Length: 528
Image (cartoon, rainbow, N blue to C red; front, side, top):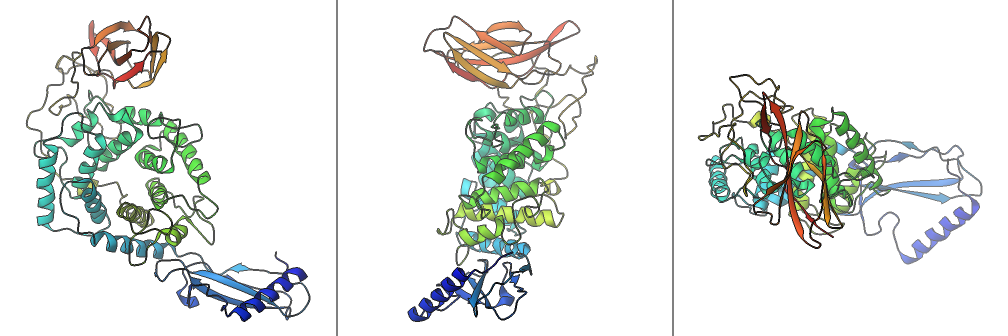
């Protein structure tokens, strides 16, 4: 309920008088006035119970010449005589989100297609090709062949310690083309990911690895260094108490990183621990918005929209929009660039990263609304008969502590694996080798006075743990604790100021024999 007081009426009349004297026309303000029929932003039906007291004028304007910029309603009230009126305003229509999404994809695509990307394996080209294919655009067989040859050339030079985000990016681009990521010129990208020693370098590495493996439901051998459960557990360790996720730890948080991790966790929301983490993260993302439903950059807003679509939640109904504005409309208003593309910062110039991320987000939302395959779900493109690696490794090869723990060839699981959980029943027989314990995930490596304390999550079915230490990351490791029952170890009598490197593996007893699992990622501790 709104009432116009005598003071407000006088102020309105003075403002109108000044505008007439200065020649400023009502409703323009350096904006482009458009017809009501063209408006995509919400308008109102103004209804006043008392007639003759005020004169009401509505106009619709646009702050940019771009057709993608939302139009807004300018509502002007002019006092005609003394008195009070009651404003019974009613919403006449809502923001047309579907139209914003459609035109936004076109705008981003127009800009990106003008940048003359080469069809080669590189960071910029990979994202361009992937987003282009996922939005329904096509590339020629010759372009696919050019990229495929480039990818083979690039990955053939990679070592076992290649950055996981690089591997995942190329794997996703090839998956979008319908290529087999387990045999890229003889290189198994999936195996490189689940065998990597670098997944705990940051939450970015873990989240992209999960997304890349889940895109085509890649099977993970039972005795691999990582499985989906251990990746999820490690990823959850980056969540802060406020619900946000950090890049390198759980101390600092960011909107982009939180939204990205939600995309990786989306397929696992049926697990209680994941659902709890997701709910806390969504609350954090809502709190991070301003009153206009905006974030500090276009990429942040894009990642949130994409995360919600992956979680099968409508941004409009999930608390990221109001009747007259939304995360979509503020994104268009602040970042859409005339002529095509999106800016990184408000009212900036067109930017490639901002453009493809918004294109991805809008396409993910469109797919969600149309009940289509999710943006990161590329199973329909997966080759029907994947090629078998030419030199499989025997799964029961004895494991010894060494400077290199990543297998150079793909491992062949001894028993069929269930893709959704990576859990194979532990029923060893005389014909099949026993399943090894899972790889431990070190939660904390803390330094003390001449000591170091490690804690890790308990491994299901493990009889105990073995702790190894070295003075150099790639040096020789010695076992400092052979039969440890607890998931915690304190190494004492160390040298002050020295840095020590640790890794842990679990073991169990089967028919009197000790079966050891894969080592954890290496953690370093500088002693106080």
